[in-house]
Each structure stands twice: as structure tokens, then as C-alpha cells.
Amino acid sequence: MTRTPPLAAVAMVAVLALQPPSSSEPPPSSSSPAPTTSSEPTPTSTSTTPPPVTSSSAPPTPSSSAAPPVSTPPSTPPPAPAPVAAGGREWTLTASRLELGGLNYAGVVDALVSGKTVKVLKFTAGDMKITDLVQTAEVSPGQKLVTAARPGSTSTVAPGRIELYTVQLKGNLDLLGIKIPVDYTADRPPPLNVPFAAFTDVTVRNTDLVGGTLKIPGARIYVVSDQAPAGRR
Image (cartoon, rainbow, N blue to C red; front, side, top):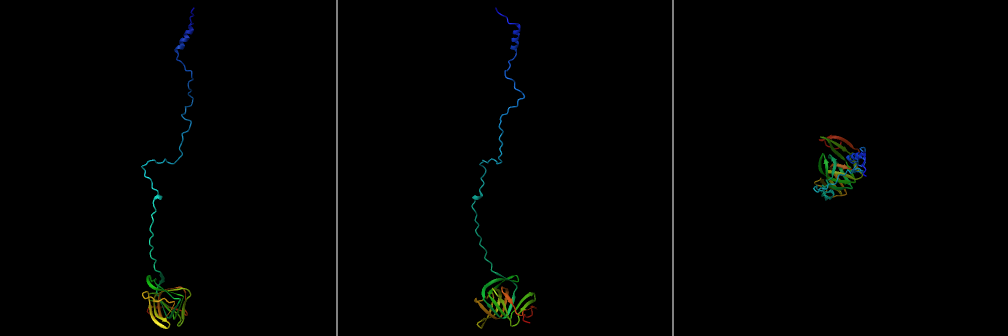
């Protein structure tokens, strides 16, 4: 005998058939954090050096060390100037006798006289003896300074190396008692170099005397006009 299902059971089956099927997995929670794509931090470059330029269009910079050194030819030094004596002004020596010991004639050199360069004779000596010395030099236009020794006395210049720069030496060369007139200048220099020379009645125009100590017995110093004779008074 066939049993008829109860009406309530048929209705329950019909209701369940009309509902959509449900998922067995729980729905995602809206409070869950959003997923991240990577757990490692993005690497940051700490180098400040710019990347090398790989372009072949940039011309290479030439190295300074590759250039060959340029040698400068040495310049020819200028010729050495002729020696110039200090001087400054010309002065005149007169004597009845002049003796020069340890004498050496050093040649013709330049000397400055009143701002001009003149040719003079250079002598060196070990000692000088001057009898009846009188020296004159211009101190101002028309005025001369005179230095005179006691008449008949012998003045000396010593010791050491003495340099004498002479414009003119005029007198008598006393050669073993024989007096030979001489007049030496830069144009007419002494023909011989002798270690000793004596002159009488001599007049010497000098520009400078260097070295030694001049001793004048009974020296008198005075000023005269240029027109007056520079004799002893």
C-alpha cells in the first residue's frame, strides 16, 4: 500500500526548491586590511655619482700630461757693463813730487763726473807720498775749495790697497834722475806697467781716490774765487 507524504512535508520541499543555493564559505570581512603586493621595501639609491656617459659623440678630453714639454732656448746674456767709478766731481792735485809704491796700471774705465760718463785711467797702489800737496775742487760756480799742506812737507796715503781714477796725469817722470815729460790720459795711456813711479812738478786731475788714509801735515783749508790762483797763502 502506498503511503502519501504528509502535506507539511511537501510544502517544506517546495519552499527549499525555490531558494538559491548558498555558499558554504563565510563571506569576507570588510574590516580586514587591504592586501599588499610586496613585503620588501623599494630599494633607494644612495650614490650621488651620476651614471657614466656612454655616448660616443662626446670628444675625449686630451690629457695635459700627454703634451710634450716646450723647451725655451736660453737667451744670450747681455755683455757685462764696464766698471764705473763713483767719483761725482773732478778735483786737481798739484805737487813738487809724487811717488807711487806698489803701483799697478789697471787700464781705462768709465767714471761718473757731474752726471756724465767719462773715460779715466785706473791705478792701484800700496802707498802714496806727495810733497808740497795742494788740492782744489769746485764747490759752487765760481768758488773753489783749496786744501794745502805745509810748504816742504810730505803728505801720505796709506796703508792698504789704494784706487786712483785719473782723467789726466801731467809732469816729469823721474827715471833714475832722468826727467821725461809725460801727459797721460785715456787717449794716451801709460805705455808700461811698472811697480814704482815718481813724478816731479806734477798735476793730476782725478775723479776719485778710494782706500788708505790721507794725512796732510799743517793742512790749511780755504775757499777762493775761480779767478784767483790756487797757490799757497
